[in-house]
Length: 201
Image (cartoon, rainbow, N blue to C red):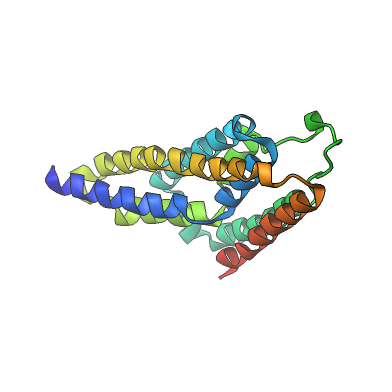
């Protein structure tokens, strides 16, 4: 019991590191917080947790082994993730910045889009595979440790994601001109492009 508790504490630290450090999800959350506010970004946060949880379960049930058997599937996923990251960067860079632009016409990422993104997000894959291997125990306690790891990832992940939205919303008032909003969106789009080497390396 003590060893399992120690393992889950270590898993929580790992999850905090993975979910708090910059990556595609957090860059998009900060961008959404700054452009749309906290309330309109909540579906995005929930989508991340839903998508991450489904990915986590799929890996526990053997999806990782499937990629080992058919490496071409992994290569296809990698190519799709690069293309989608480029598309997201394009969307961020081209967000409307004029104050007279109708707010109703500007839409943050939906829950469904955020959930599906986890399946091609390289950082989500890396974190989940590591959690499913390094932070589980063999034998009869495997599924207990696996389920606890799944719970820990969500318990740690939600407030971590929320923090990035708050950070984005906190600078919203400083983005008080079209020029500043444009520079901010260009910066966030550029950061998304910087994450691409995570995929191709």
